[in-house]
Length: 144
Ligand SMILES: CC(C)(COP(=O)(O)OP(=O)(O)OC[C@H]1O[C@@H](n2cnc3c(N)ncnc32)[C@H](O)[C@@H]1OP(=O)(O)O)[C@@H](O)C(=O)NCCC(=O)NCCS
Image (cartoon, rainbow, N blue to C red):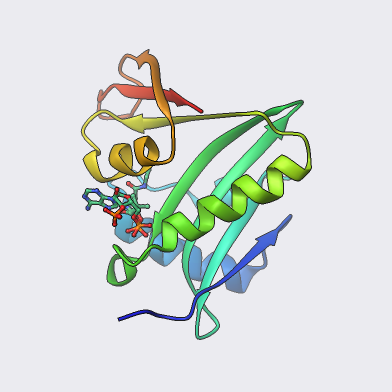
């Protein structure tokens, strides 16, 4: 079923937003970010809302013409509905207005859903960071 999703960009997030983000974060990753990691002043957060509740986010930072995608997650009950795609399209549109030309990210080599998602969006494999994650898993570095 098609859900109505609203996408917003925030330069800083509130405690209420953080609480909702952390629920998704903990449900999405074995090694979730801590609260403080979402509060860095360098980060920009794209939020997806359904009925005024956060159902997904992308955290990124920019330097010169580069964008670093730092975190992406969608609430487990809202996956495969195109929400990550909507957020990434929004990120591309907004950041290109600000002169961003290159997008970088790291993804676990065993995260097939995410790798498929990035490849579908034109990301290419750039290399491996060995033992990048705390459990020793390698990261695939991707660029677009
Ligand atoms: C990866 C993630 C963000 C995708 O979010 P989503 O809203 O479900 O993705 P979308 O519905 O927008 O899907 C877009 C495309 O991604 C790919 N994709 C998404 N989920 C997939 C899955 N489970 N298996 C295979 N491909 C998948 C598909 O190519 C899909 O396009 P399609 O539906 O036309 O086939 C979501 O699965 C998630 O939150 N995972 C846990 C956190 C995580 O791994 N984050 C990435 C860290 S780098």
